[in-house]
Length: 275
Image 1: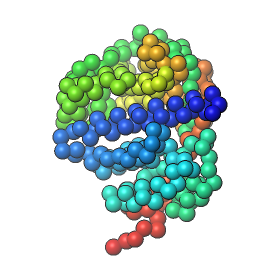
Image 2: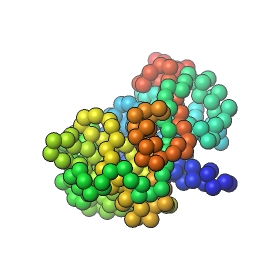
Image 3: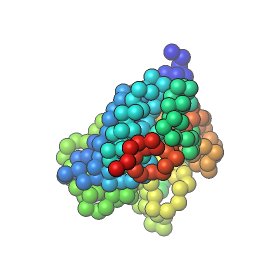
Image 4: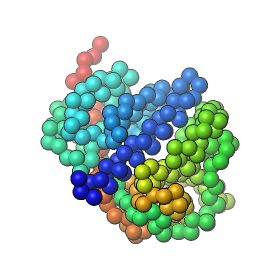
């Protein structure tokens, strides 16, 4: 395996592990009111489901490859039982005609594209000490963080109390951040470090979608201090975020294709039986 393919595999597995951490944290809410479930196919592929959180961010299959084509039908049946049509995501590096054909036959089309970018950890893009950035180091801050990610205050408080004593907060390579600088909308961001890769998911803010240079640089610097060789993130293809990351020294590593059902977001997949 070439060095480039090894790096891609490490990035994919790091992003998958982060998705698993997210699912486990939300599922820890008392009674699992969000209906969180998942199926991990292997280290680089996972299916995520959230019955109470409609939309593709929480109902998607990440990392589909040609050697996983046999999993497509069982996964779609699993989602159909929950009344959900998931988004399916494939990776350009693992392009496979049989997989693409299977998705098309089941009524899916390529509805969007993301580019995954990487740079050496510690890449500059703003002052990591600026911007009123706080590390999430307690249940109170964690609740505020989760509220910014769309959880109701009650659920956010429950999740924070569950995560903090269990050691999940700050463990398993996870670092969380808040920016609450006066005069700017609050923002929440995460850093996940695994096997020399630091993953920086896009920050969540109450307004706007631009790249927060200081918040990103703080995470990149912390990733370097944690032993990461590379930092990765994603952006919509040809977006302003991609342009900003490119100016910061990030380079495209691979493209992620997002497949959506022609029938929309909810209900059984195209071709499934009806009552």
